[in-house]
Amino acid sequence: MDRTAARRPETGVETPGMASGNDRDVEAILKLLRAESEAFWNKDIEAYKRCWVNAPYVRRTGWWSLGGVTWRVGWDEIERRTREQFAAFPEKNATPETMWRENMVIRVGKDMAWVSYDQHATDQGEPIIDMPGLSRETKILEKHEGEWKLVYLCYLHRTTHQMSSAVVQIDGERRVIWKNPAAETELAGDCGLVIRAGRLRALDRAADQRLTATVDWAAKLDEGLEGRREAVPIVLEGGRGEPANVCWVIADSGVILVAINDRAAASDRLKRASLIYGISASQAALASEIIAGRDLREASENLGISVNTARTQLQRMFDKTGVRSQAALVRALLSVSAPGE
Image (cartoon, rainbow, N blue to C red; front, top):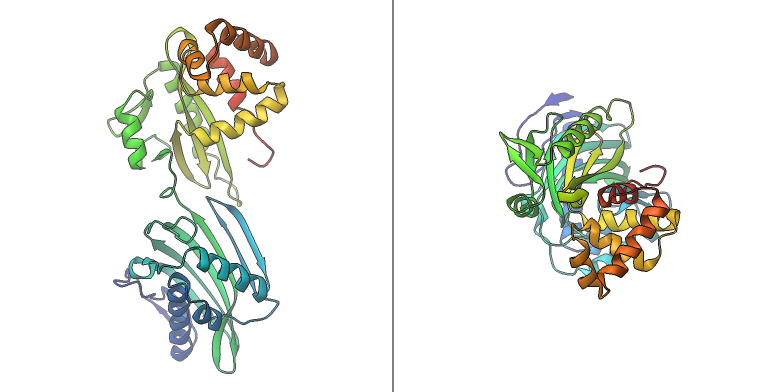
């Protein structure tokens, strides 16, 4: 049987977009998917266990934007880790009540089947449990004593919902598609970026040219078979060549994000740059203040040092990196990245 159905589920119930197999098997698989989801978010380990083949060959794999790659081998490991996670977050999660799935494909064989779909959910306030936004999932099932059970799960979950830093999603023409509340706050202040005629722009002309060029590059990055993810910092300069702020253009498999004043990203790059350039701890502390847009007077006050000491540390960083302005220093320190980024 082949059929097509294209409607958004109203109550989180999965509707197959394309299915091949007899009606009884398809309905049983849909029932299993619902049971597994409800058991997981209800933190019911025994119900969750009944949805899986409890054998060493099962796998749970995935990638999510807050944690990277997951690879769990065998039911014993999956059960142990799931129990620990449920114990840490014991309250029921309302995700099944709001979740919906689309573009579902179900292919059923004699005693094996696979399912693929796009899953949408909302943020329920549990960062380790929630899967807000879009996740793409594939599951493999086996039939055991007439019942379908899961043997493999792979999920790809990219979300900006749980990012604490300011994030704007744009297209290749810099048209704003979406922005989070933190970005609303940053853009309403003096971050060096504005939205004009629906497009993201930098107030500084040179920075705006760099933003245009970087977005053009990001738009062309997703042309091959495999996806790519890279991040490029853009220094938004103030007066006297001092950096006023930093934004990051992030190319992520066809999606373009601009993160504004992302302290975590800057800190990670600064740690690597300190190793490469031989930046001392005190110099790195000053660099962090400069990256945050503070002038030498503000930075020295925050660090409890004199302005003259700050100038000496800044000069030493200039000598080590071969630059002669604070904006160039920030670009040099934040442009350090690891292979594969």
